[in-house]
Amino acid sequence: YHTDDNNELCTIYKAVLSMLGRVQSSQSSSVSKFTLHLIQKHIRNVACIQPGLQLYHAALNSLGRQGNCEAILLLLNNMQSPTKADRMAYQIAISSLAKSGGECYAATQLLDLMKERGFSPDLDCYNELLIGIAKQAGSDKERRWHELALDILQDIESQKELSNCITDQTYNSVIAACGKEGAWAAAASIARRSNSSTFYNYSTDVDSEQQSSYFGNLVDVFKKHGKGKEA
Image (cartoon, rainbow, N blue to C red):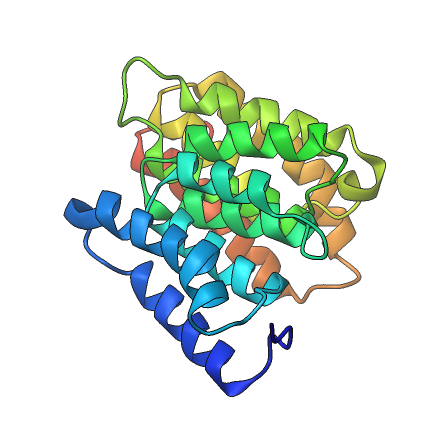
């Protein structure tokens, strides 16, 4: 077996895996099966390549874009030495699921599993998930997406290494989720918290144009929903 993830053939396989992640959703089930076949059998038996982390990352990203959490879990659990699932493997899977549309709940469950297995998500991973939740908020009357967004924000704020670097994107996504589901008291509360925690942190690092853009986004959320007082 070859073990070099950077050779020319591996580059081709990574491109193929990436393309599989962009196939139309109506064919996602068969595409997911082919993706698993490619990474678990074909690359090993036909190309005689022992897949490394780069190939696994490409496969996980593809399966996430296909919205197949079951296949992701199967692949993560089957990754064995010397290519055991690492922190990046989980983060790629979570981010791609969140971007796929309609799979944010599965992405949240995967986030919990990641933490159970001893890996800490970074802020970018949390933000990707929150962006997906904000997009999905209001689309399902049986699921309160804004409550999930608030729980995730609380999780971020409870971690000292993350709470000191929360971005405007973090707060904007939570506020948007609250706004879409009419949770105006929660949206106003988050806006006040973001005002006190990020604006003054930004004052030494970010120019006035970026600060104005940040608060403009917050005002826009309230204005679009007829909440003039909060705006």
